[in-house]
Length: 222
Image 1: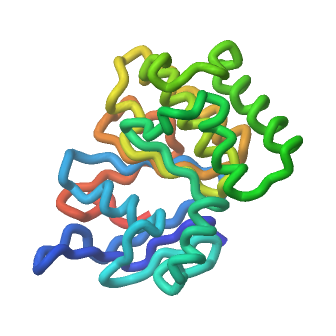
Image 2: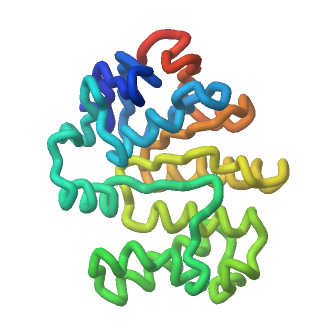
């Protein structure tokens, strides 16, 4: 069974359909890029896949569970435990250190303290920031902040990682490093990845590329 599926998904704003009748399936550990120009519907689809928005037609299933039928409380649980999200602008909490940002999702899930420390130590080592563990976000470079964001998104061992233009606010060198890290860690952790991007280079870390234009997949559903 696919870990994440969209079946005939559509979303409209007013009378305008932004996306319509889209089908896709994501297998465990698979990396899929949603590639296309700004305004083609990539982020709208990502929001539907992550349960942040509800479709006007069709359904999204996470590990077989239809998200449109889930209560707000259930969606909150799923987003904390089974879905990880990485944003273009990092969204780190400025009053928490790098390691505290990574620990936060686990504290919200009431993990035991020893397990939190073990998981955080392993992740911050994996993203190469052991020497910056106690730094505040304002003291980190853009690339370092995104590395913290990647570690935070993976902290609770999600089934699916959703990344919305994760290199869009980084220079080329930092962007390449973050992409390499995403590929390495999703492979290591076994998390599937949906990567929204307009960059062919970024899409290159994925197993499959779904090209979007005007709310549709150019190559057909996958």
